Length: 264
Image (cartoon, rainbow, N blue to C red; front, side):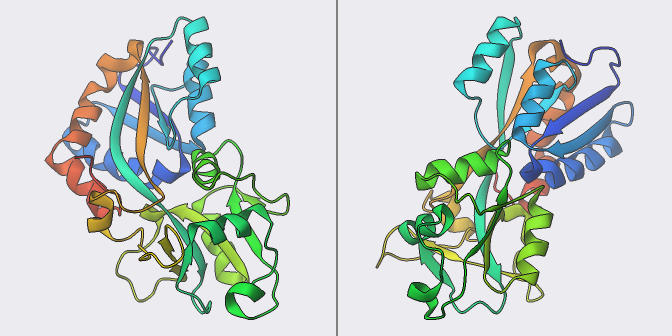
């Protein structure tokens, strides 16, 4: 049920975390394979997976694995799906650049994002409200953060459309905290408009940055994860050249240059 009506056009839909990287990969792929076009759109992991189910995509980019309900729907529709892990990402927790802390532990982060702590007073000494900038529920990043923290998000959390909107919100809000894919953060840039918090697994343990490639390669950052591509078997032959490009030398370099991590 892939998009076999046009064998020269590959449709990629899904994860907002992956969309910028996917666009870069598609642009460079076209330089080497101009007989194939690759159309990229975001909207969230859930949307990409739904597009596969409806025969409206050849590749679903997803920052989470398929859930049980989705696996059942693919089985019920007789759609066989291949899974490719093409990169690794870390989720970054951000505050405004002038915010008075540089790190936070996992438990306190959970209290903040669940709404159990609705003031920064116990953390910064200032009685200021906590404003949460997150993603909508069809986002893989939303699901990932919720599961890693073992929480339900505060009802007061702002549900933003994507990483760029979250960053813009945090830039303007001195009491805000949000989460984005680390690939959206400018690595080693003094002009970064937001501050990336280092995360400690527990009080007293060393805090680790999602921009620390060594820590990521050693699996020491609490919020790192694989990035998936789901491909219907009927689209595999059409997309195989693009998948091979991602796994090749140029593709791997682009993944790293874009702030993501290669899969070892």
